[in-house]
Amino acid sequence: MIRLDGKIFTHFDFILPFLVFPIIAFSFLLINEANEILSHKQILYIIVGFFAFFIFFLLPIRKFLWLIPFFYWFCILLLLLVDLIGTTKLGAQRWLEIPFTPFTIQPSEIFKPAFLLMLAYQIKLNPPPKEGYGLKMFIKLSFFILLPFVLIKSEPDLGSALIILIVGYATLFLIGVNYKIWLGIFISLAIALPVIYESLHSYQKKRINDFLSKEPSYQVKQSIIAIGSGGLNGKSKTQATQTHFKFLPISTSDFIFAYTIERYGFFGACALLFTYLLLIMHLLSINQKLKKDFFSRTFICALVFLIFIYVGVNVSMTIGFAPVVGVPLPFFSYGGSSFVTFMVLFGIYENLLAFRFDPNYKLIRINFN
Image 1 (tube, rainbow, N blue to C red):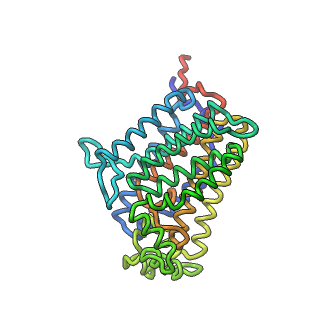
Image 2 (cartoon, rainbow, N blue to C red; image 1 turned 45 degrees about the vertical axis):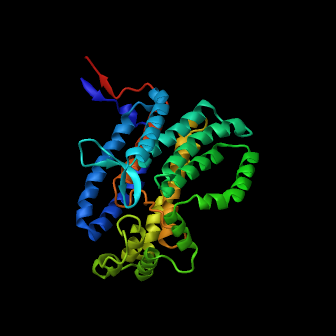
Image 3 (cartoon, rainbow, N blue to C red; image 1 turned 45 degrees about the horizontal axis):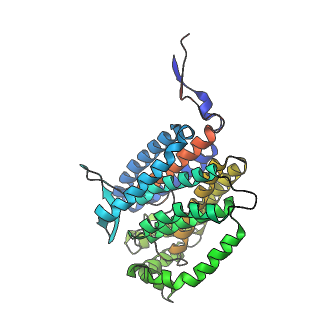
């Protein structure tokens, strides 16, 4: 008789679904209200996302850690191909066409799981000493962070590039790097800021100027109006005029947080942000239990920073506290790339927890009696 080995669920994190499912359900409710056609597409993305979750959860990741560098460099190759044969949408060359199909892929999204795994792999191979990493190891790890940053920035996709940069160095900061190195970096950045600004694309400079100017851009103005009109308890569907009369731009993706407040008010926004806070705190609590498992610790640290930055940047740009860079809310904004990417990341997370004591696990057991 063939049966699934029940041991694979012994260390499964069952709290995680209770934190993520409400976010997905709340998101679908809002998207369906704003645009039924998009909600039908979102159902497909959700199905694909859960399928990707179970694939990566069941993969024997710890048995094939040596494949991680190949996965990383394959994704780097895809990023290089974007510069050569990429498809342009909305003025940015960020996509690759899938041969013989009408679909495209965005390599900068596919790269994120490869990046987190590669960072964890390198730190597992060379755990940090008590005084933190020295300059030689820091330069080596920086190479794996800066290379994709440069490639993604050139698409141009400054938002995704900065997320890679911040997540990478924030993870290194938490894992442990000698303080003298950080001091040198901060001084160098302060000196180089004018040069960095001049290297930006014109539309990126405009976003920064719009952010620093006294008058916010049209998008942010409409977002703030929607937020203010929501009050404490929000409005009914028919009274949410900012969204349904199309004043609020991209209300189901980049500015879905503003639509959330217009419909459910301050209390609805607090409930959503509190759920994200619980998710982050839960992941950090799990991370504290892993002790010397540097691979899992690094991956979870990077995942926490990724969620925190996505949420922080999206909410900040919605209320005018950050430039508009097109960063979605995890599991909440409409779209397939971000949703599937985070489902893959959580599939890897559950895999690392479930099989951390038994890397040579078997998915099925065969009983001949």
